[in-house]
Image (cartoon, rainbow over all chains, first blue to last red; front, side, top):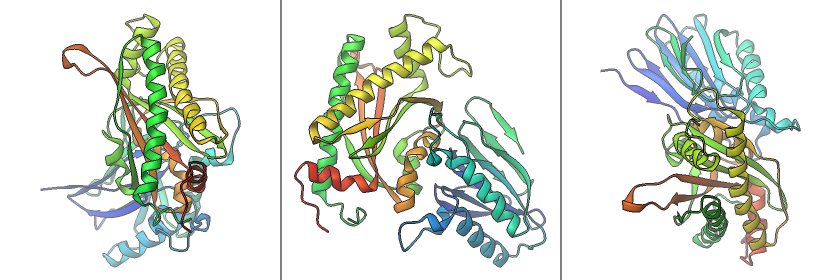
Length: 162
Length: 213
C-alpha cells in the first residue's frame, strides 16, 4: 500500500517509493522537492521565509527558512543513501496572492523566497529541473518519487505535471 | 513580552472579546445589507502552530473568496474575511440581482468582483472600527485586496510577521451565518484577525489587562 505523506507549513519530510509526498496551500511559501531518481527517495520542504538570519528569536525552527531547511534536508537524504551527484530539485510556489498600489518589500515575499531557493540550491550544486513559481495563485503539490513527477494543482488553472 | 509562553486564559479572553465585538458589528452591517437576520458564533481564539494551521482553516482543497486588509497604526495586524466561493456567489447574486454570478469560474465579471470587494470592505471595516472603538487604538486599514483561491495560500500571507518572531500564530476566528428558515444552512463567512506579535501588548494594555513581563 502506498501512502501519501503530508507536510505542514514550515516543515519538511521524506518519502520513498511507492509512497508519495504532498503539501497544500502554497501561497508565497515555496515547496522544494529534492530527489534521487535512482534510489527513489525524496524530501519535501514547505518554507515560509528566505533566510534564517531574518529570525528574531534565538531558537529557530530550521524547516521554516529556505537556507536551513535545504541544508538539513540534504544531510538526511545523504544519510538515507541518496547520492549527492544524482540529486535534483523541483520547486513550486512563491506567488503574490494580493496586489496593492504600494509595493511594500514585505509583500514581495513570494519572489524573494524563490530567489533565495534558487541561490541556495545552486550553492549546493543541485539542478532545478522543473519549476512552477510566481503568479498570483495558490498551489497544492504532490510528488511521486517512483516517477519523479510533480503534480501541481491550482484553483483556476487546473492540474499540471512537471 | 513573550507571547508564546504568556498566553494565559485572561489574555485569550480579551482577544475573544475583540472578536466578539468586531464580528458583532460586522453581522449587524451584513444584516442591514441583506435585510436578513445574521447569526454569529462565539469567537474561537487559538494559538496555532504553523504546521497545524491547515486544520484550523478548514477544507484545504476548497476555494474561498477572501478580502484582506493590512492593519496599520497602534495595533498592526492582518484581517481576513473569508467565504466559500459558492457562498460568495449566492451572496452577491442577492445583492447585484444577477443569478449568473459564479466565483468558482476562472473569469468573473468586474461588476461582481467589485460588489464582493465592497461587501468585504463593509464587513471587515465594521469589524475594525468596532475593534478600534473598543480599544481606543488608532487603526488604519489599507485598501481591501481580493483573492479567490485556497484558504491556506491566502492566510499564509498574514503569517509572515509571526514567522519571523516564532512558530505559532494567534488566530481570532469568528463565524457568521445567514439565518434561514427550516434549519437550512445559509451563507457563512469567517473573520480571521491576526494581530502582529508586537501589537498584542498594545491591545492588552489598552483594555487595562496587565502584561506580565
